[in-house]
Image (cartoon, rainbow, N blue to C red; front, side, top):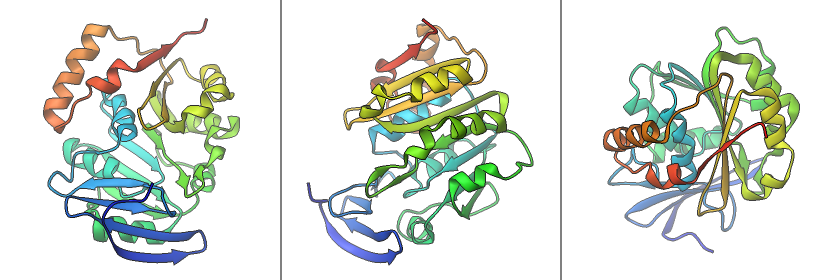
Length: 249
């Protein structure tokens, strides 16, 4: 399916094209002929448009991070949203492609400043570096025109994320529904105390894993979802209704 709108910019690097489209109402980031990596509403730039992005933000139902690492930038809609609504949060983003970072600043209003720092580099190499401080939250959303980089589902990757998180820290992975039949869920359950998942209408499968037990009642989660929805300008209800807890059984 072709992306709607006019192509307003195109650049290339060793991984292929980086294309920006604009239909007057929304702006899109694309890496391939028909793929839509990011969607940005011009009249509401802080409101995530994709279901998977909203599903990833469900982690805020359980915690209020102060230090976050994001692997894979896209247009930066996830990071821009958190930057605005969580003023105490400090974010580090690692993105492989300099052209993607340039596009996020130029076409999608990615904020600049000390609370949101972007580093050019390979996410998997970055994880192996000594980390000065442990993290509250890691968001992993590493995609190319060919789809998910499945290195983020390997046991070594999942183990390393656990090592650099605080004892009550969280990991969030954006995957595809097809990965439900793989080993990622079992690997996570062997490493993390609590694991949740959420499917989306667009075919994503978002995994949320906590190092410590975070059991919350349905009533608490609904109230928290309502509170966050009012604060952030979009509903958490649809993704909350699809949130599934994975017990040890």
